Length: 449
Ligand code: GLN
Image 1: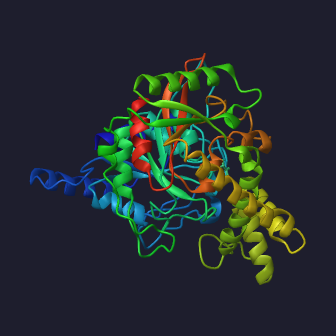
Image 2: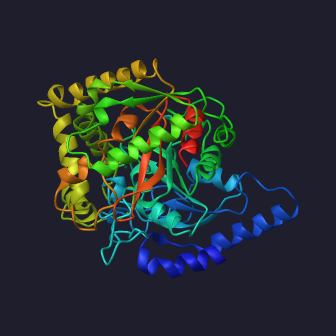
C-alpha cells in the first residue's frame, strides 16, 4: 500500500509509470502477507516490482508505450512476470519505455519522457532508455526492483544513468515469451535493482527454462545471490583496449581506472585484451536490430492487435493504421530494416552484418581465453538533458557504443554504479563474462560496489 501511494504521488514529477493496477497489486500483497505469516515466503515474497510495459501482464494494458497498442490487454501472462509472481513478487505497475524499446532516452514513449530522479540545477535529465521508467522507479526508491529488456543496452544504460544496477544474462536465460518483440536474436529480459545482490536475487527469480520459448536455455539456474558473495581473489579481469575511444571524457577514463584499482585491491589480476572488431559493433547492431524489428512489427496491421484506422480498402487500412500508430523512431527503424533486407541490398548489408556478428563473437571467445571477465565503462557520458539529442538519431545511437557488443554476442553483462561525474551525476562500469557464467559477473559486480 505504501509503495503504491508513494509511486502514484511521485509519478507526476517522474512520469515513470504508465499504469497502476491497485486491485491486482493489493490482492497480490494480501496473498503475500498470508504466505509470510505462515512462513512460506518465496525468494522475493512481498517485494513490490515494477514491470516494463513490454511484458504482458494478464488483464493489464501492455502497450510497449506505443499508440498502436494503446488499450491492448493481453489474456496471458509473460513467463518473466509469471515467475516473479510465483517467487512472491507483488505487481506495482507498468513502467514507461521508449516505444517498442527503440531509443536510449525514454523520449519516444507515447506518454512523453520519464524523468531521472537525479538532478543538477533546473535541467530535467533523461533516465536513459529504453527501460527508463523502470530505472527511474528503482532510483526513486519506489519499488524493490523492476524488469527491463536489453537489446543493445536498454537495461545497462538506464541503470548507469540512474545509479542503479542493471543486468542482462546469457541470451535465452530469461524467457522472451510474452514480452513484445523488438529484435528477437538480441532481446534479453533482465532486472534493475539497487544493489548487485538484489539484482542477483531478481535475476534468479526471472530465469529458467521455458518450454514455450524456442531459444530458452535448458540449463539449470545457478544460485546467483550466492555468486554475488563470492570472493574475486585470483580472477583475471580483461581491459579491452578498443573501448578506449577517441574523445572519451576524462571522467570516464578516471572512473574506469578507479574500477581497475578496486578489483586489483580485491586480489584480481588485470590483463590487457583486444576486441579488434569493436568498431563495427554499432553499424552491425543498427542493421540487425532494425531488420528484425521490421519483420517483428509487421504483425501490427490493425487486424490482430491494438488499434485500427479504418481506410477505404484493406491496404489503405494497413497504411493508415501503421502511419497513425507508430511514432517517428519506430517508422525510421522499419524503413531501415526493410531496406537492408530488400533483395538488392540483402547481401551488402544484412548478410555482411551477420558475418561481422560472428567476428565479434569470436573476439570475445579469444579474449576470454585470457581472462574471466571484462571491465569497461557502461556509457560514454552521464545522463544528458531531455531534448538535447532527440533530433539527432546518430548522436543517440552513439550512446550504445559500449553496450551493443554483449547483445551481438549474447553474453552476460551488467552495469554497476561506481562513481559520480563532475556535476554529481552517477556513472557506471560494465562487467561482461562468457556465456552461461553470470556467477562471475555477479561476483565482480559486487566487488565494485
Ligand atoms: N538504444 C538502443 C536502440 O535504440 C538499444 C535499445 C534496447 O536495448 N532496447 O536500439
